[in-house]
Amino acid sequence: MGVESVRPLRLGVNIDHVATIRNARGGEHPDPVRAAHAAAAAGADGITAHLREDRRHIRDRDIEMLMNEIGLPLNLEMAATEEMLAIALHHKPHASCIVPERREEVTTEGGLDAAGQHNHLQPFVSRLADTGIRVSLFINADQRQLDAALSLGAPVVELHTGAYCEAWLEGDDARFREELDRLTVAAAYGTSLGLEVHAGHGLTFDTVTPVASILDFAELNIGHFLIGEAIFGGLDSTIKRMRALMNKARAEAMGSRSA
Image (cartoon, rainbow, N blue to C red; front, side, top):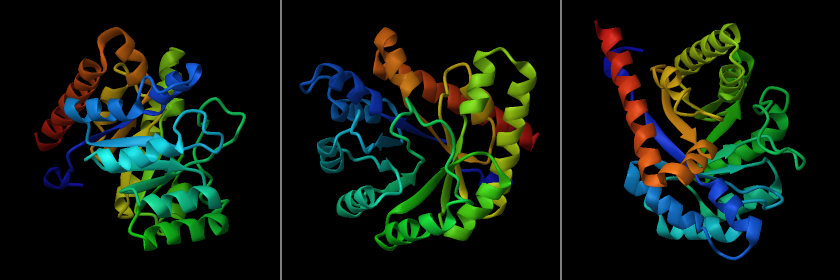
């Protein structure tokens, strides 16, 4: 990828855990739609919301309100089920990211097996795309999964950055470098296939710079850390700081490539 063809790095803000806090006590506060408005004002390029089967955080009404009130593109994360497909087809968000989902998991534990579930996923990808929804697959940084995404006709993939972030938390420098290399190689391969490549899961102020420096990434989706950090510094300043780190990393990486 030449420097002139590098896309600006977008930030998608996931508001799920504003809804988690709301649901812990019931009622309507804090309102995830209000958080989406605040994220937009702070420089987010898009809003992500995961409507889970058990409705543990985002609710159906939240999706309706986000579609009606938010000017930014909505990325609806969803499992490949008939229920979620019907909801996506009804609301027609800008994008739908198909993710693996297990009821007992605390958070998404890994990427979708797009290769192993090809026949199951194909009708979901096709029906979403036929409605004009941009389909994304949340996958591990693996060539086989990227090939499967291309075969399925999904124009976008999001690489799972969980293992990379875990390596940093554990202070395992060798594994950290290995996972970063894995993301770098996978992003380049995905781009070579004509896919738009995104990344997300577990990214923080400490881990975002190396990922933002990978020029093949077009978008990072970040949620839990931003909402948690907002408790201490406010959502506006937290998003602005993340945005600034991403911009700095991307500018420096582009400068290094052109030098």
